[in-house]
Image 1 (cartoon, one colour):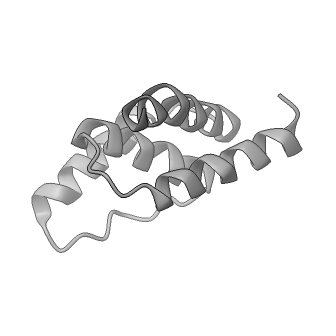
Image 2: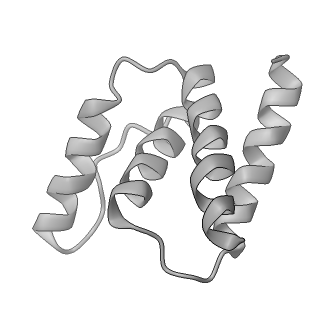
Length: 89
């Protein structure tokens, strides 16, 4: 994918998830969280007030630590297309 097209598709996928109102499985949300953070070069610590949630988020980031920015965008888009949009049907 060209970089501009990839960024455009990534933003569209993020917008889709942000507008999605039905509950999503926690494991899917954690993957989306990790890929989003990597794609946006946001390496700050999770900011939840709940330590357990921070631990799950940190674990998701650790599992995705070797993913490049472009690959994180691609994986985010793929998850949205294959999992979130499938739920929507």
